[in-house]
Length: 128
Image (cartoon, rainbow, N blue to C red):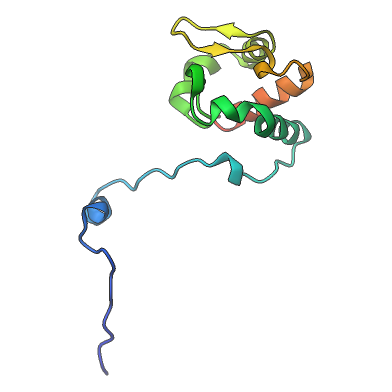
């Protein structure tokens, strides 16, 4: 039997140290909303559509203090207020004590109350 050589590109580089260290936690996967398939729930599917049309502008990058989608730590104090409060803030607008801003209807006055509520529920679904 002959040995087959095994080539490991980049093995031992600083990028691999965390992976090769016993007991090291693996790096957290980055959440990429655009790769999320359409939800089966019709409300969440509508919410995803609204999110991708309007909400992503702020919630993908944290613009104006917007909690990034799927960022549990940023959403925790907001979720503690309840979904209905979040829907009201998204519909009517909100200026937070830390200078964060949620423009009414995400800055799109054409959105209906149902569309705003669906978008909030979609965002919340990624942190519960």
